[in-house]
Length: 100
Image (cartoon, rainbow, N blue to C red; front, top):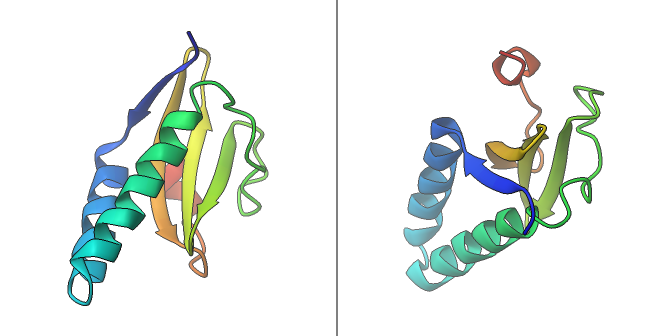
């Protein structure tokens, strides 16, 4: 069965923003990037600890996977994987935002 994967409203907004930005140049590539982000997130239901710990946080429950040049940041809880952010790979996190 696996662990339930859910999305924070902020992470959904992140994906929408990424898609809109990429779609300005290529709607096809925007769709491909979003599909890969969603597929990667969904794979976490079987392997929630597959990603490394987010270096800025150093907390074992916060992990990340790279999807193209984006960081899919998630939190592993008891019965859930919560996608908390999707940001550009060069951007650092604001830890205060994720730890609330």
